[in-house]
Image: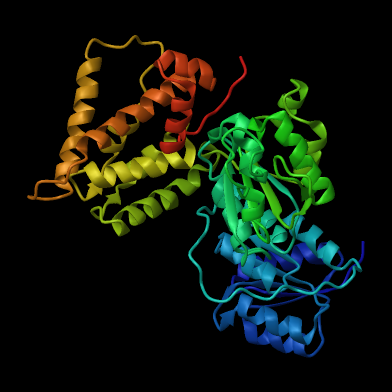
Length: 478
């Protein structure tokens, strides 16, 4: 293993001591300081083969110092450490030329490995230009699971690599796709999202690739597809596992040859689109069942990115809950806070609906909770899960009635003493429709045909309602 001189800048004396000892045992010479000025002096004098720098120091910011060091010594590898563990911190470190970003607390052996890699000769790479301004956080969470997501995303920003995001419903797959676009090299192009599960299978090819006039019954004029709409930008294909075989074949051609034809068209159209796919299903299992092309899987799965369910990142729940309460307040709902007991109850819950379920709960509590502080008892009343083995009580009708009464009361409360405008019927109907359809889809394991029969609806009517109500359809094998 190559050894060299490592410059360490961190205002925490304990961290400096640990790094001194660990890097020294690995054979490196270590010089450490607690301020940015001394580090800059050493770098300007040409000292050091690798720099390890903290973001926050008494006399400066490591991220602000990084471009100066890279301008003076472009070949110098710089490792950034930070306790400000957000996606923006990882992005800024990468954009400003950092060799690696490590969130605190870091794994000592991993850091030693990073230093070893930094000392390995490699071709020079031009660092991307830094993003201007301070954007709002695109993703919330400082847990170790999210730190790994941030690090992978930061490395992907300057590329056009195809990404497949995997995770349960409600984990934020579209938010990750949007962030990859907004902070990537295609940020000035369009971001187009398509949910495969929300489109009738017979219309998916036309939806994606467009169609020519007269190509099928009802095609009265040429229609632009989502690939053409996303030209120069990013196309996000959500629930890719629901794509029918014919569309899979067309998509494979785009990924292999960079071109496609419209439905009914003959002239190939060049495509300049980055593909990001997402799924809550096991694509390898679908391949085994003959429902998904293996060659398409390998083309899509260039960079797999697994989003952890909320139960695996419970430490992020307080930040997420406060964020959703702040958002609710910005939308006009009353200011609410969470008691310590409420936060602990939220962290103990399993969250089958993941982040989306937490957001809906915070919005509901902001609207309905009479007290400014949300207590543990209030949270418990909202998220208590009945024993599935217990038969429904005879008071089921009263439960539905009570829910309707609460929504009507809320509708009136939003308008104070004034009589609210018309629309309460449609509003309450939507509140009842959504859980009813979701329950039927769950009972039929996501089979929309069987769910439509159970509900007594036409299949197209059910699909329309799924789109209108933005219902996630999860198909499960028996």
